[in-house]
Length: 366
Image (cartoon, rainbow, N blue to C red; front, side, top):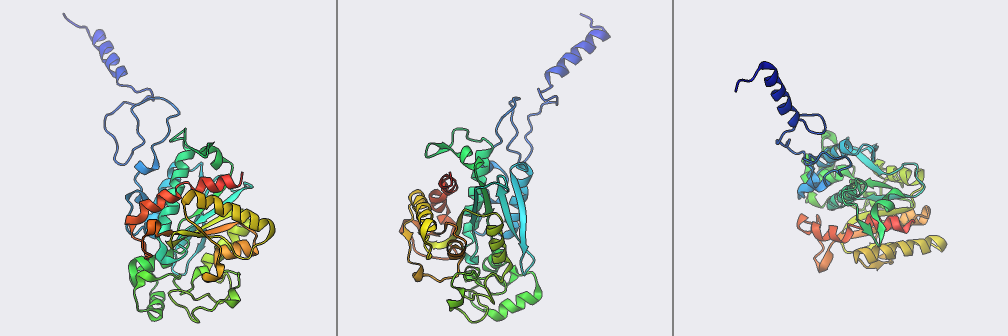
């Protein structure tokens, strides 16, 4: 049978129509590298792929999750979740790095939570804890699991009624020293000062790059704390409370946003510090909050503040600001030995204990 030109054109047109997807673009079986969110279904309202399937450094569970890894992951998360996240650079450090506040929720909300990690440099595994909590919260808001709930309450509802400030790495200079030694310092003069300050195992470094222990730099019996008299890898309290940009940033954020619950992650242990001379309603709220987080994580409470050094963030928050705040010590779960830096082989146990801390904290404010 002979086909005329007109009939041939019609056939070609019909064939091309069958290749058009419902989005109006020619369909293809080729999946672009690292793009896990592509779908063969042409329906609206499909939830994005879980962040755990996306191309992020945090998903590879590196032994040393570095400052550069963190910056790359923040950038990626912002691209896909610009309507949910606001990233604010709080300060510049002595070695030219930034401390970042990733705000989930309405910055002007009336129920504000602060969660931060890596105040002590060698405790950098806490950066990964905070980042994984952030990623899970984003998944919840994106509807990845529409049935997810906590204590019978929708996780999405909990998140939509609070504002959470995630600061994964409060001490990026110190972390870089602990992870990479002197080569982790960019500035030549600063590198010389660090070298003159200490010649031991840099993996054990806790302070920032100018030798101030950030968790001894808050106005909570600061004047009575006696540690190192000079800049050192740990226990030097600084020239005055809040002398360091990293601590001044936390102070300013806590005051500006009227933080109502705060969590500071540390290693190495398996317990929660919550008490520092608070009284009245602050004492009652602090105890209830600490008990809630203890029940969630399985970490016991410790209220003997004299057993540890003073002038920490938690001490200042409860004592000076009246903010229920806790320090969660992780890394020695299930009777494991105390070691810093905590090896990444322990991370899954830590995360299992802490995966719902965000939702427990939110519930405490409802």
